[in-house]
Image 1 (cartoon, rainbow, N blue to C red):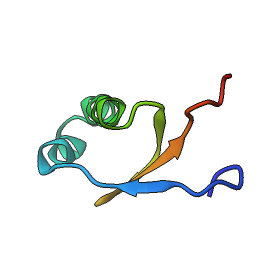
Image 2: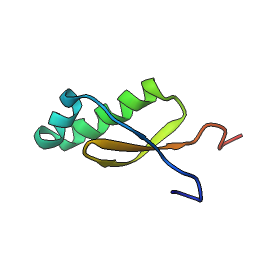
Image 3: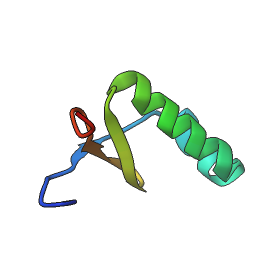
Image 4: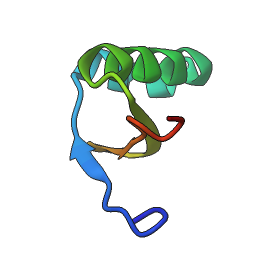
Length: 62
């Protein structure tokens, strides 16, 4: 939980996970881009193989 709100758990494909060992910066960029397309308004807050934890930020800045 972050700020009393539960996080959503999701997963992603092996192609992006391989980047974690090969190029950490590219892994982070690809992970953020992947979830920005899949879940607009959600933010990646933690990554622990094989789970990616996302926070719902939709409507936070309204």
